[in-house]
Length: 442
Length: 75
Image: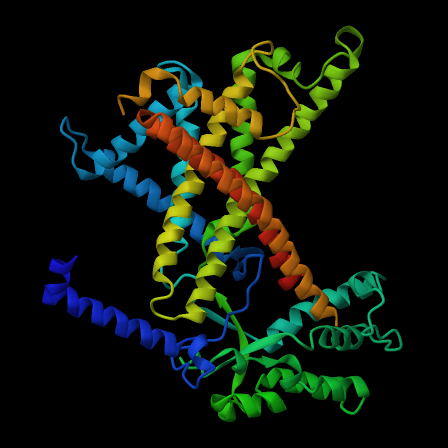
């Protein structure tokens, strides 16, 4: 340690790292409370559903869809590159993929219990692992989630007004607004009524102030403006301005005034009036942060599991796992069969939410760290996200394998205890991995 | 008022939801270390199974986290 510290390169590196750390600390949200915050940015709009970025002939293209295609194409082209010229002594790419395939081959064999027994599960399991891995890792590239178009306030309101007016046309006066103070049954025109109700409901929705197309560094959370600072919602509700005037204000989409707190708190807020406000809609977003993607992969995995089960046991015997005759075998086993069937559905849901939750949480974690400690705060968490992405992909593939093996097992061989998801199958996996023949060799 | 209750709800959701998985991960890792101490040659399978089981534990915390997110941003 003493020898290491006497090396001038190490000392220079340490000093530089400390300097960057303190600059980032002062520049971020933590420093903003003490008059710093020159690198800060407001937290972007966080939304669960994927954002539509284009509309091609009635088909809405989401930003996560593009990313899933991109990861699929990248995976295919990498595999094509690796296997284009196969040689006896593998090159780097071929070696990498050979190592991956060999690792999963041995794992599948050890779980399925016997050499070559795992071959049947390998393609689906490996495919799931690779595609999930690629879509997880592509999602944390820089620029994804931070580069996009600005959805103006007018667009934001328009979508909701259209939806609400449509509801009113169908005669659904209340729905989500039941008991809300925002209901305006006195207004007869459906469009006007929808407009007023939507503005009233979303009066506290916050928008980021843009300088043209960019957000200047140094803006902090206080530079976000509410909808009522772009449109005079209170005036509209009190009837002092008409719907047409309010629509005009929205069309302009500029900040009219600042709240008293903002004027007092925020040095940078003085020049915000007159600038455009809106929401950042990223062009690209990690595909695993969309529930549709993870559900699709989960359904694929579960369908594959059913097919493995039917192929191994035959249709009749496999159906016999779920439908048990209560008169010949007893009502308890019938109940267990139903639980087993429910377990299949629960596994699908669990698959879906495990991956989605992990990836979505990771995205928010990165956003929050970029907000608190810009420049360097993200670095350890980027490493963590790489690790989480790998682990989740591995878990997804492994579980597909484990479920597949347990679906192919004969009825009498395994204990149908409880019928709930997870625990029992994990024991199966644990027992499988402990089988002696493979682990020592790899 | 509505927003305050929401904030409390979201905080409670993740606080209580992280309690169980936290205990679970601690127990799990402790047992894995014990097993490792008793049988150091079985390092690879122990590690593999531990990571798999950790992902199960962690998933429960993730569900709670999702609930909190939905309370704050969607509801």
